[in-house]
Length: 397
Ligand SMILES: *Cc1c(COP(=O)(O)O)cnc(C)c1O
Image 1 (cartoon, rainbow, N blue to C red):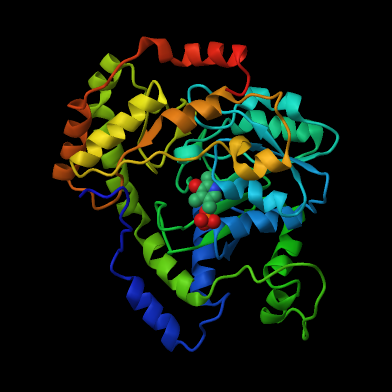
Image 2: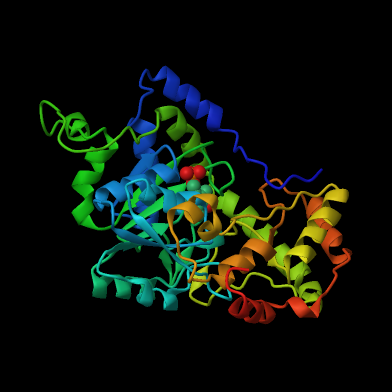
């Protein structure tokens, strides 16, 4: 069986974890935490980086940092992982969904302005598959309407927008080291603070609402409760594991890039002939080979391909049930008048291929052959354009 994902170990993880254990300092904010944070600050030009136990945590910190209160609105793409919205909903924000672009699952930048109201506090663009959203457009809107931009860079380590690293552009940004990402720590994340306004409070929120970080640096001689917060920092075990990965980032990325390029090249002709969409990378973006996905014509075509690959021992997956259609949102927000055709399209038609560091050339050839030999039932009546028309006639069908 060719799995969909297989976490890659560089070989140094246990060594550094052993070192962390025997150093006698295994709680958070120790040497390995600082090494990892400095790595992000130096390599990506992030003002201040704080390691967290997940990307979800980093997003929750953002919600606290920007003082989300019940009734505030936060604009989030519908086509994303739950956490992008959950972190803000948890503080009482009303989530206002945006649709995806039609050439890419990223947030449709040109649809954002009409979603802004006097209650809007933030926009959370997601760099899906590590492909940049058009950050100039989003930052310009934010400046004009005085909003905070929080990049969900969970999938976007090492990606760039017009040469600038993702996660260094928004006022705040959140990365993930979940085992399905390029760089992993089991569970783990990082908050990037690029706007100096947020730096001081972020450390306090990170350390249970106390000024303990200042105390550790010897800047004050007692620490106390001074704000809200939680225990957002991971132990040194997580940081030690992560450090082994970060040290090998060049090698990991080179390998992933090669896999991505092979899929892209080998599937080109087949995709073109069968009207299947390959990822489109805007000219302003360099992607980090986080995943390889395809866009089929309709849900039955995609499901049939998943089945045909499965028979050959190849595990491919779909993901993201549009959040606007989730059970939670259907109960919580009644937005029946709004439609999200592109988000629904990606929910129905996107397929992710096996993608991991140790995928061999032979295995990748099996995936490519499995696809190109699959029986693709083309149904000209289910193109994206038809879907648009159908939805215009039957809202919410
Ligand atoms: C993985 C992911 C998250 C959540 O990351 P965790 O570290 O598991 O909390 C959030 N947003 C997106 C877009 C993701 O891909």
